Length: 388
Image (cartoon, rainbow, N blue to C red):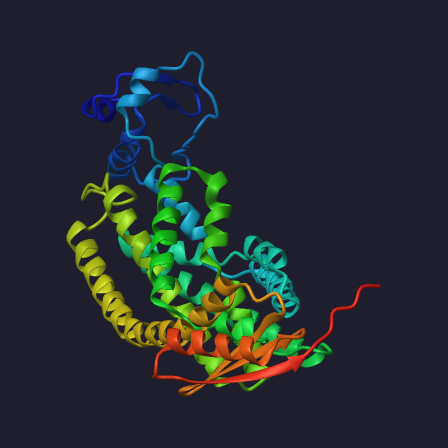
């Protein structure tokens, strides 16, 4: 009772009994961490199994104290977030089974180019949880959570890569499509997506909006990349393997960094008092982890920026060709694949009866748009429309 009065908690109830006492506390939501830390300093909950703290968040309270709810900053207690991190920091049969099933679904979605199936795989996979364990462990100086999250994510990644490789080897008619190869090339936009996803995930955990965590899992999009790497391995495509691995690392690292920032400012660390943890040790450990993560981020960002530039440069003439073709509305021609080989642009046209003059006009328009840096060649395929 003395502790609660010192924290200016007046709304509590003490129930005495012959065996033990029960204290129920109704308090502003932003004092949860302070109450827990003060009780931890006063009592040894680890050694004395007769004492425990139970945190309840009711779905509804009647009558509602709306003014108090508005004044208090509603967020999950630090212990609730740490418990979530603990649950996702180790590997068990359930975790591995979900990762395996997710990898199977994602691989089939990539092979059939079915994005709905790929999205379903992202929902199944528990790939987001271990990253949150890494972030929480870094903020509250729990190296067991930090290392456990890394281990769990690594185990899941290896399982997904191996599953996709085996499926790519044994299923008939599987091949690496151009669409899949392009998806495995990281760009600077993937870095921004990872940062936004991590910030959203951190906020979801802090605010207790558990129903929206599914959207964060989909945005993370980690399992499809892992499966793409596995397909690249079985088909001996180094660009897919390297690009996918780089994309995976930049995404996971950016998600973790963004979550760490959110947790540090509004999450487990916000209501931190030095009674429960060694504050200086936490700051030192946190700073070291963030420095290493930032250095690794810079190292990974260099090739990503280069790949982004190459991708933008390579796609620019293709976009110009598509625009030129669409702007002129050639009813007797259809634009086929466009390939780039150095400075040579090879354009496939399906011709349904165009004249030589029309082809020459289209050639001149495209050449003017792409400039003198590229040479242009037409591959004309004579075609005929038939209605049955």
